[in-house]
Length: 486
Image: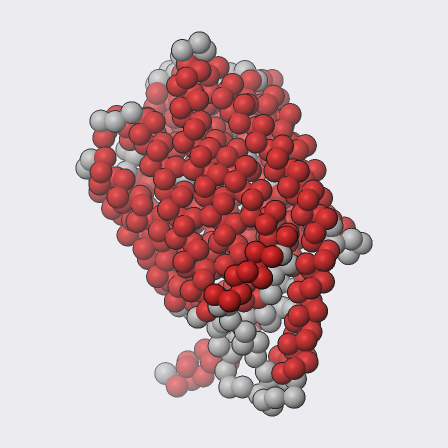
């Protein structure tokens, strides 16, 4: 037993331990997005089972985005002041309990309450997790590594859509039960992660850590005016409102493809599977966020304006491709009486046998490739223009703006679909509604351009502050025992 304990102590803080910790954080960023998107592909069966309209279920999703965003602010502020690991574990267990309660809900109020509980827990994972991950990445590689962080969330969105479609088509409660088990396992995985020191990736603090010192600055209420005075923070936060109005509307993509399948004559159950699978395949372009992160890293070595400019060009460049995608026809032939496996096979084969599906897939790839450049550069910019003790809180403020925009987009788009349905039958009402919401990407691109003008000054101010703090503490403490979590 003593030998085992000794080996575990030897592994603590090793490269393997750090890699394990990074993998856990990235996986959990993915899993919490699975939880966030399970409901939209199942709007119609949930609404029918609970005896409400689809728009009522859509309202739950919209409000849950908002609850998660508000909760994230509290989680992040606590994480920036105290140890972050317990926050992540507790938050994960809270959303797992909410997911289990969702599966057990027998009526609409119970379903609503369970989703709000899950949303409150989900707020911890992204905001506190971002603070931790940013302390593992040097500024030169922030775009690349943050692209994996953002990509993991995109993968979670895809996995959630797929899980809902494949397991939930016949019984909408099954995906929530599966995810509950995953959530509990994730909380246990946190127990073995490495306690990452706050600020340990900053070049300006390297000498301080080498001398055995610690970066012990913590956020306080007096810091709030300074955070808001950084103009780049303002643009990075506000752009989330308009951007997420669009992204919030896009959770209805499975419903658009479901409506196209139903218009082709498929049953609702088959159409749900088709809609979920097609939406999942069409979002694979998000993997190209890695290219956006790499491009941001490379160009940032030439000019500190680069990250914001890459995001601006990507957001605006994706608009026409999305607009085309919504209106392209979608024809998928499925054998009569086919099961889920046969439907999945038909969807996959249509990518090479049906020109309309192939054209839609390529258009979706281009749209996602462009707009996904936004994510890693947004993450990296927040880390670049804020000192380590502010990052979780600023991220959560941006996440709050994102949640407000996402809630607005998800809520209004349902109303828009119903209003358009009086003149345009499905799936045209869905396609037209989603196309109209793309207009909100225009102010998003403008705000990124404004951020590109202010970010050079704010980045240099943070570096100067860290150098000053490191120099002031360099003569103290030859070493401190242990590597405690910030």
